[in-house]
Image (cartoon, rainbow over all chains, first blue to last red; front, side, top):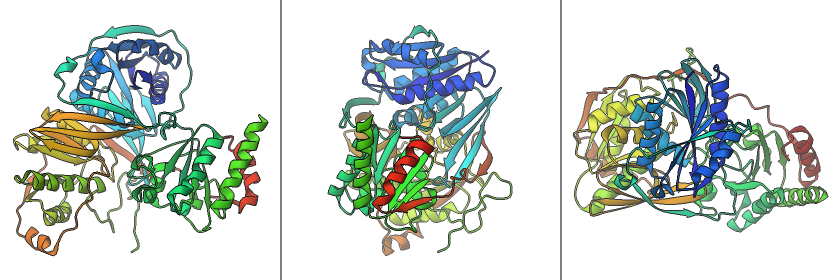
Length: 329
Length: 238
């Protein structure tokens, strides 16, 4: 029985949540198509092998560890060559990447090296025998395309947050491997990784996102959004393009067609009208809450729960009530 | 203007009636980066390439009006969804071009795959940096910045190279009247696209799963307790 490979993304030697998502997806893909092993590929600096156990806990039967001092940071050419080499050396019917910034860079390189196709930014998939189908939002999220991948291995990159990591413990065996090329020969070199405010939760990893739009009227009023996110506890803060274009928030906070595509459990839209370009980035959220003073705003068409009202009254009240609930626990 | 957007009767393509194709947002940034680099270096020219049916000629003319020197249409009646099939056609066209930079948008606004740039780079065996938001070129080398989730990377690479361009790096210029007039006389070459075999095919298209119709639960701050109750007991997300 052929195996399924999952690329386990790390940053600064730590696993990212999307690594658990790809391993969980690979486990589901293998189990739903007759079984077979799940192999997780873990590339990083010496010591990264310590992360193998967590991958086993999420369903990996084997963890392929590639350690090298020059691989503390992402090294696109070495990573792509090494992952492609692994696919060539084994019998793999499918491979899973995350559609994270790193995965979106890595997966197409690997696909081209192997001469196979890639389904990108996938929100759902089925593996049956030799063929894989994948769902992919396209055309500004206006259409969901079901794609069929033929050829082996079938490669997919998963939209972060579209799969919930599940623990399915096994005792993963650890295999070590060497980089397929000498990292010193790589032409493209990441010379610096600067982490922004490391305490803040990333939009792709947060299960709850509180997001603000033009309705906030001024940059300093984003404090209302931040206070609400802080009261909730495990929430990240996002913004619309209008807000990032005006410099109220950094461009990297933008959610929408030209920004981040997110799928949190809960998305709270504060003062956001709901332009199609914004909806493209968040309409796959499981629950959407909208707070807006205009009852005709398009955001209310997709909001599971809408409150029509002045956000400057509604949001502080919501923050207060959540704080009370949290204290009661 | 009324926009019409519908899935065709075959349930696997878009109804083309009333659809107008334009340059993708990120492709506009890529073209602007190319034009700025030529201006900065004081030499060279920008060649603009598009793959698709004759409808792309309008987009190519727009690029010529912005300042590209010449255009190439790789003609294909249908553009496959498979990024690798497209990358193979582009690599066949670009392999002998001796370009210093090959620029792509980070992702196409319609198919939203983001794969063609890095795939083309692999096929050409050229260094590639994706989704860059800053760029410095000098002495045959480049330095770029890439934004990641909660972080950014500084990346160095030698030329020639393939880059895919994210937002924030350059705002596309508007074509001047003079540019529009000049564009009519600039060369636009049409060649058949040597597409690879598509092994990623559209099986069906559908409108996104309906969200339950939006529900307004109340007005003003007084609706907050009800919202909390619903989030805790119905949606179970708090």
